[in-house]
Image 1: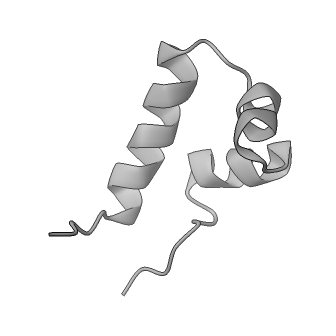
Image 2: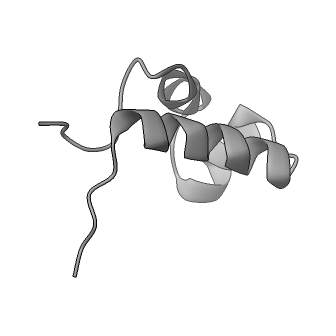
Length: 53
């Protein structure tokens, strides 16, 4: 069963991952194949990698 994640939960998760693995936005982006700006926008909740309904 697939669980839905809210935009707020995703933002919190990105922040948690950056802190817990002690990576910069650039390092995380390179590790998962996204630009630093994309990671920054996810962290600020300006954009998400999925649709929110």
